[in-house]
Image (cartoon, rainbow, N blue to C red; front, top):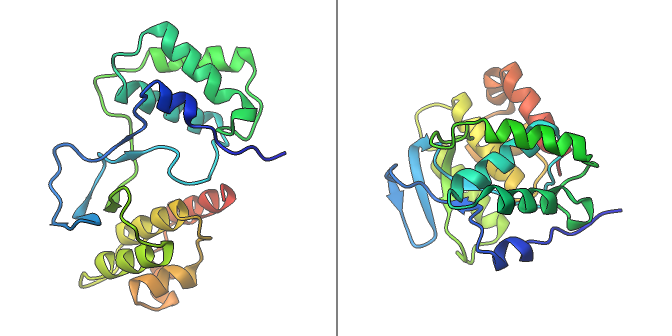
Amino acid sequence: MSHERNLKYLNDRRINYRRHPITDIPSIETKEFMYYEHGTYQCYELFRSSAKITTYKSLKWHLLVIWYLNPNLNQDDFTQLAEYIVHKPNGFVSFNVSDRLLDKVMYEVSMSDLEEAPKNKLRKVIFKPFSGLSKEEKLKIVGQLVGQGPRVCSDDIYAVMIDMHDMGKKITIGRIAGLLDCSSRTIHRHMCQTLKKEKELLNQQL
């Protein structure tokens, strides 16, 4: 059974689960988006897409990011929040999380250095809330901005893949090539094994 994600609990408690870059400066900024030519790792946008948490590794990362973005949470509040997220009917996870598994991930998160930013995905185009743009318009902008360099590189492909995933679009070689205005052969040439694996993982989450 599919459950719609219920963010009310987080919103009522003013839990931060999204944050735009704080020190990285965008190369271009408009009222609709920010573009970082060399990318940024400082953008955290949890629960932006409809994709659910599907693995233990992903669950740990999500909880780590939430605690990092909410340093004022005490242990009890964070534990209650984690219990809410792993309760499958609340729509955040796709698998059953036992008490023992939750205790394990909570211990590992508590042992992490919360002063250090959690490892994150590279982003080049970040759309502002309530931009009013459709998914198709956003993808067109991503393609125009990311593909404007002299040649396609693996970072460009990855950035486009992340945006396609966040907008609920299945990632295909043809779509990537179309957005970056190059041939499918060019994409194949720059798709390393890591990118191929990431492409499959992202598509599995849709």
